[in-house]
Each structure stands twice: as C-alpha cells, then as structure tokens.
Length: 192
Figure 1 (tube, rainbow, N blue to C red):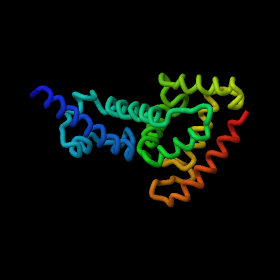
Figure 2: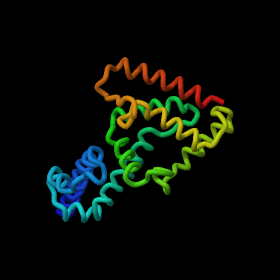
Figure 3: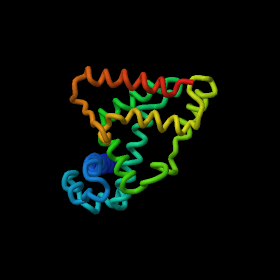
Figure 4: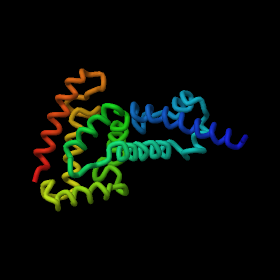
C-alpha cells in the first residue's frame, strides 16, 4: 500500500512537471525556458525533475514527442476524407495551441531544415494516402507532399500563422466559416 502511494505521488509530481514545462516551453521556447520556473510552479525540485527527465533537453523531448502522439491519437488521419482531417487538425490547434507552438520551437531551435522529426515520419499516414490515391480518391503525387500540403492548410489560422492566429474565444460562426472554407479548399486541392 505504501509503495502504491509513493508511486502515485511520484506520477503526480511527474505529471505536474510535464504540465508546467509544456506551458513554459510553448511560451519561451527551448532556449528561453527556465528549469527554475518549472520546478517552482510544479512544486518540486531540480533533483526530482532531472531524475525523471535527465536534463532540460530530455524534458523537452518527452513533452514534444508526447504532443506528437496526442495529435496522432486525437486527430487520426482519414485519407479517404483529407478535408475532414484538415478541419479536425484546425480544431485541435484551437483546443491546444501549445502543441503547435512546441513543434514550431523544435523547428526554429533544433531542426531548421528537413523533416521535423527525422526518425518519426508517420508511415501509416503515408500508406493511407497512397492507398487512397490507388483507389482514385486522392490526386496522384508523393503521399508525403499531399500530407504536408493538407497540414499546412490546416495551420493557416494556427498560433504560428504568419497572417492571423485564431483563438478558441472567437465567434463560433467565424470558426464555422473557416472550417467550411478549409474543407472546400482541401477537397479541391487533393481531388484526383
């Protein structure tokens, strides 16, 4: 019983660190994030943080890779309806703007060129797009390029947009108008 309580408390501390550090990295980037702020807000200490994550880079990696997993699981691809997938991505960016900011910091501070995460290219998504292409549902071309364009279109109003960053607080009619426009645009861009 005592071991279970220690394990539960340890997991709660680890989760507090992740929650606080996610906000810290999303706001300040990798270089600007401060471990001192994280441990203070998470009500823990550096030794505990380093025991869980090794160092600041290990902490960022755990959070960043977790954010990628969340997007994959929360917004799974449907290659037979890429327009709907784009809209669901748009909604996820509204719901969790911190996740797209983490990806952007990773791009800016770690991987300015090439794949965002070189060893984690989602082969399942590419296979799904290739299958949809073979079935005549999606235009011909490199499945990776099709996926990249759909993701880019879904990010048009994301927190890292160069034009306009939308928020969940905006009028629901505005979001519905954007969803309709995005759905139509993706449908036309990926049609065979």
